[in-house]
Length: 271
Image 1 (cartoon, rainbow, N blue to C red):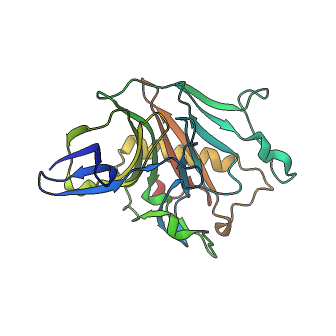
Image 2 (tube, rainbow, N blue to C red):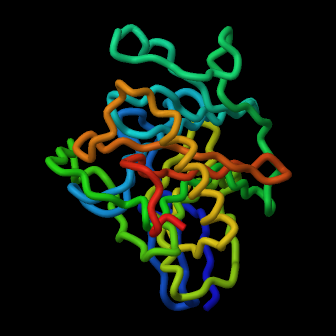
Image 3 (cartoon, rainbow, N blue to C red):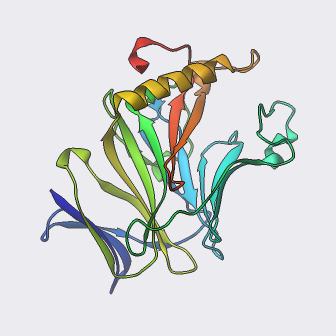
């Protein structure tokens, strides 16, 4: 099918409009950026889920922040308006004796990964970041307690061999539309949008994507490596919902973050 996403202003206010055909569309209101009202998403449901993620911007800058949503989140992705994009450690979290950092690339810096904003893929449209959740990494979390559950956009668990893909897109222009071919099976949806102080619109979409054999094998290796590096005093019991993040990037610098379960040694269904 052909689909389109457009950013526009209507009498009732700005919206992101998703067209599945010229006659059929869905509008998602575009609110003003508010750090107290982030876009939050996860895959599955409380008790069996992925990690919890949130995206927000300050009221007075066009910076975009992306972070796993928990009190123990020790890092965040900062997509600065200046084009300086990075993943960095939150040193202020290390006041607790129960927390420690292992293998920081440069002990004098809090930067884990840094890159420059890549060019738009279409006029006024920039793919900012992707978060991927493979179906096999949606796992049971016994005794799970998710705070403010109704403020989280929950998507269905994908089957093995597929992943839920959350894509963050920056639309610089009003009344701007993008037309593309989209298989019905991918189930594209807009899960949230807000406008930053410069007038640009941050849009978060979700769809299903098939994992290639090469990617699946690479993720299997990453899970095994991460599990092997877990300190002996770090709990990976299912009740704690332990997770890890793997990063890959394309030639233009575009980053993809894989949200992976860290609940035990590698097993057959991971490959």
